[in-house]
Length: 207
Ligand SMILES: [Zn+2]
Image (cartoon, rainbow, N blue to C red; front, side):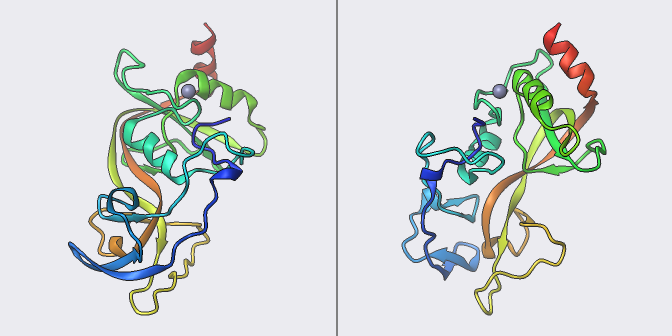
């Protein structure tokens, strides 16, 4: 059961979105907002109870707050253990689902937290290879970039429709849309990237 997956017992009715005057001007907020739990770096976050193990696991989905925690502390998306200092070269391994198999490029942005070597190998070996391909990359720096979420219209307070078919819009922390965005994922940009061959990954881990 992946660390970042939600459980059925972690559902909650979402509070009503209102307009709120924050430190950097108007944006969205909750009527009953309590600062530290609802906001991170100025972004309003979706509310999700944190009760891992409650009910049944929802595989293939992501718990917004554990995803954020994993990014913030560089925890493995599979087992939740820290990936800091796991490698002698201090780099982090990122394993991502990829429709095209195209390697990760310098500065690419991702919502996928890092993986430890063991969980990465497990994911590659257990994933159905034909439907879901992976790319792996070793990264020197994963930098705070922004959030993935739903942008609300300041005029109608309704979600702004997205025309590219993506579930969430990527919004940088200095983007003027940030105060109007309900965050669902932390986004980092990847730097000092070296692509890792999946066969090599498995070989190294089992050697
Ligand atoms: Zn792990």
